[in-house]
Length: 520
Image (tube, rainbow, N blue to C red; front, side, top):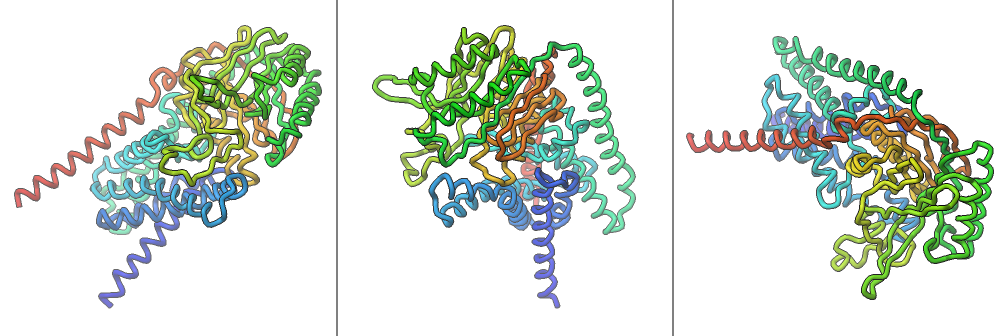
């Protein structure tokens, strides 16, 4: 009997850790269980209450692995179908990435074992979680895919405080609630009811405050939006098959498809027409015959035209390639461009490629892409467009920087055909919603195939396409003179403060433990 009890406890701990991983994944789109995020960590927190740091590390690693393997399974399909990797290599890549991301969950649970049952413990839980999310978003090249706050993107009233704290504020509130719930359960199981008077009421109070702030901000923004100058936008989703997109023999058909769809939107009289990332799969800058057709179409439409196309520069005998967005002004009288700054590792470039020559790129354009050097809006008349290309929409600092530079409208060009019919396009869209809320700027999202969308400054998705369909989205976007939000002005000061406090608290606890050890 003495030998079976520890074994059963280990088994129970692993089951609880596994359950947390499942609940975390269920809380994200396209699953309809975003409410699961508010208690997803409870099983894990209960499992590690009396665990050693090493045991907590292993349980946190298990939760992370279950979560990230089930959340990002789509990486296998991308690598196998478009990266030309065999199934074993694609699975190994997913496992490697999931292991890396799981380290952050493991570090969180390890740090939690240093906490006691003080009233501040649930707040410290939230601080540790946000600190690690911030590090995940910036370490190496940064990979802030599906931070916990993104799970609530459809709860419009709840996420409005992102204009104060960014997505990290929502993550903090969720983890704080998880901490309070797990603490109450643990105290109830141990029959320590004296400390249970304030915890859940605090959680309810904070969530109610966030909800109340959301109602206030939404009503205020809607009033301003009604008084704002409307920009009539048309988004063209041509649904070009990824397997033929880069075939030179298919380029003419691609141009014809975009031309036909753009002309069919003429009755709407758009001020702005948006095509997706690499809509033109050739070098627009050099192919004068094909480029002239695009200029003629822009002049004919009498609207500003934004689209993506690969580009290159020759510098000192070296050809450098860029993922570029072009803006042709109304009447085709002006052309400006923006080169993608934050590239997709192992997709648009190979980090440490000298040491990793076996990794193949996912892009089919020749050579590695180079990052752009200048973050600036593209201007068309009195419109200032902050363009984010694909993956850039998950990095808050890029959208914030563009708005700081004067962008009054965010434009996200993407090509989610890579993901197929998986959960990735849903997740990608959910993160883009927060860029509109954080900066109080409407967003126009153009995808080669789903999800194209028109997103209001409140984060409400006004119109959305379906996956793998040819379609046109039209709508009026309010371009108001919204003041810069606190988040736009000061960025991630909330997350950075929590990072500093978490580091200081952890350092203090370690020092105190050493002092106790030296005394004894």
